[in-house]
Image (cartoon, rainbow, N blue to C red; front, side, top):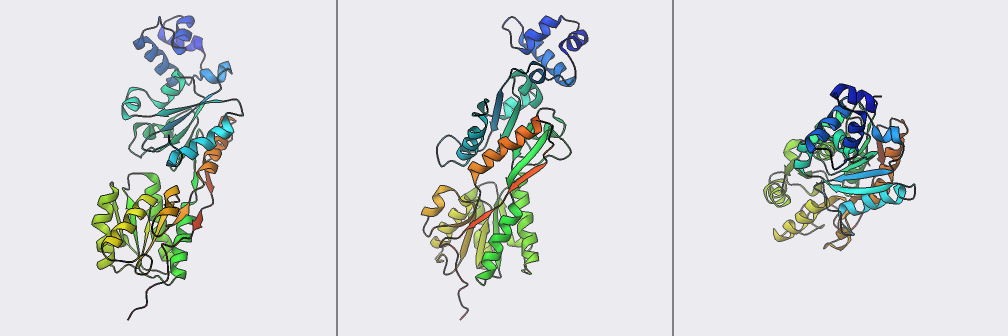
Length: 333
């Protein structure tokens, strides 16, 4: 591993200047600090490993609500902190912008702010740092994302294929044969995984389904307004599985506005079990993610990476929460 002197020799500056730049000394210019940090990253220098003094972790988050109880990211962060802080770590929550990702590489950011590792929430496949993760050197655990062939990266989530199997099996047991699927845009790893799981599970259950039985859109309202009527009329779907509870809730309301009764005419299943699912009318059947345990698992995976245990993927079991938005197929008259 590179030393301070190695960096100094390459840049033709003193070892002290390198140290000051890496520690954010006020008498070092921003341009010189950036040069030193970029060079340190390029040479594989890890300040945190050499000093042994840093006990800082960060949660990098975007496109996910997290500040209020009940928000999707709240319990993920809480679970992570419940494990990390008693172990002596300081945990910073960093809302990540595209501008930040363009201004600093992931490794440079982590080195500059002296973070040991990151728990990464809400990133899309197109984010600049997602494209860096396959070759990054600073440990990171990605929630609902995946990077292969990098021992510094781990992935956590629930077993989405298991969750989809539970949802489809439940509907089949109620007599449903024609099942549609609504999804958020497919520019994220998890939306792709859930769509693939739906199609494969339908085939395994000997039920007919192809891409024409699905619909996706970036906006929930667009997804429901554009694709739900088609699935109900053209495909004569008797049940709809949704990639997210927000879509399921919107689909439930849209069906009622169109004159369909839930679950007498159409059954609806969501994904995630957000707190409001128990209070929709009717209450929503959904696949539960235990977000508190997922947060704890994120810490476990990150600590494993830091101790050179190359965890690849850690999946928790899914659980189907059956409420009143699913019922038996209406008899054909």
